[in-house]
Length: 491
Image (tube, rainbow, N blue to C red; front, side, top):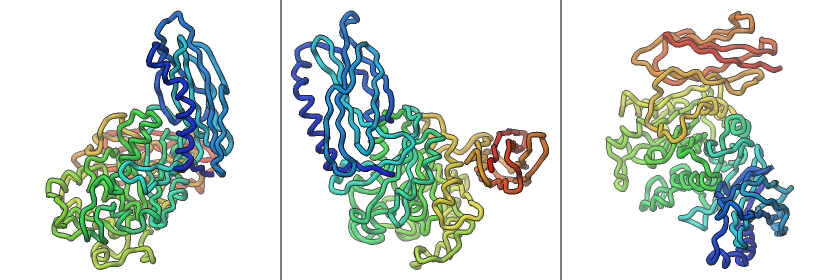
């Protein structure tokens, strides 16, 4: 179930809270008082610790709360005063979400007759909910955000964006990411660019860069590009949840994949850790001789060869399902599209080869997902396996190639009947790689990889259909590197 707080609800909430606070504000100009230590404005439902910085250690610091509820169906507003109270410099207060109510708490502290306050909205952890984001540069085009917040959400929680396809079905797209967000401490966000406000290919997966179709007309200010909105939403979410990570990950499928790879090209300063573009139907390739939108030749664009080289150093993972070879009705078939290949699988290879032509030491990865066609639910587990290991907070890794061997934890785990195993390494020449599965007695039950491989990141699928439930181990050997991890099959 998803819940929505719309523009009218925001206005009502702000009006009530403003009236409530006016009676206290005049005191703060005359007498010093305890100050509440600020934290996240958005939090998961539950008990929360609040601390105050008192003027005097000998004075008494008192706390109390008001609660505002806005019905998620009727928008009816109810306000409850002094729903809880406490005394002390540090207190624990119960901030619980009420059933089918947008729930906002105003927490007050008082010392020497002077009041300080903070306002906090709470959400159910591990559940899907919806917010309306009215972005700064275009208040008339609100965006629905479908969000999952994990129970263990903290300042160290990471963010991943999920970009929907041409059907604008963000709620469907985020559904397969709920368990991933919960298990890996991610806030998952799926923005929905509705056809009401973003009706065309131009305004969604071509980034709303030009006033006309396929680059015709004039160049729109960058602040109004849909490419720009992702970073703006990230900073807003980061502030509301008080997150410390300055980077985010982004995954898109089909039209969303087109959005992702173009955003990385046209927004080179985007704070992206890893960008994953899955099963795109068409590409803007890094070629100065090919006209936009199939290349970057355009009189109003100032892309240079150096820009394209920097683009080739981004952490861009091009994912393609090996079964995504059908020429369905959604596949674009203009001459510029057809020049890239007969199907999505071929076009992904064409795009990657264009990147290699720019930079033979390209940081991009071309990732095949076996036996998956044009399915966002089929591609999501492989993307999640690639994202399960997050780089250290604050490190800008967008231009960094993996510099060591790494075996990731399989996903899902436990599993039935199949799971994804991901590993990566960087080495100046090919090395012999084996990936084996063993049972509890050390007997080999499967051989997944047994060949020389070049540096890069790889994804393998292990099928446990013929095995019984139990604990197994997978072991990677690459050159002198050996690592083993546990996986659990439950039938």
